[in-house]
Length: 257
Image (tube, rainbow, N blue to C red):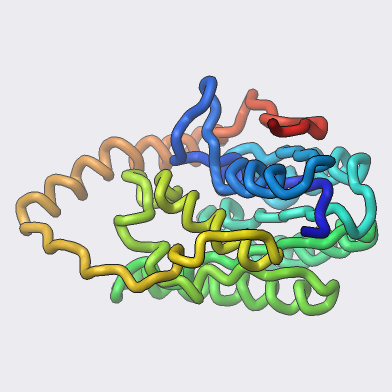
């Protein structure tokens, strides 16, 4: 294992929203990866600057300058997951967001750190207008990730190589974030990608999901609308972010025992 430091940047995905909570904070795939690397490297340290709800511009302005201070060359792994919140906004403008993303990656790559980038799932439903819009937006976003990733020599974790990650087994009740099993699965895939010790069973074939009756499915959908969708729309209308007032879990490198 070559990495002695891991710096995680981004939004709710990297903060760990949807995972189990430890001392009032979500654990998340990044914490899980850091804990596993720490078992292999006694001099390892970890920094997590991710905050839920943040847009690319906010990560660029607030997280990247802090991250740069802690980079120690190629022995540092920097994960960067940002842009999904931009893509989900009604007023999303790819001509602004995609160049912002590329420049952010170039800035991080200039530090000499090894970068880890992520694509997003492109299919969340079998059909429908929402799925068409989702696929159109995220396929373009993902191509941007792959192109800049190739340019700077980043490791790219492609979510579309693991379609099971978008199934109810691994997705939280809000249909947007991962549940604990999902964060654990992403952690194992990342450990494999970076050349660390990992559980080879993480990608084993899974049995079919049990069918859900129409009445139960309708009830679950209504619950989701009132519990998650309406509050999300309300925040967008009021210009409020779920990350407002929050601070990062680990703004400075910590050691893990």
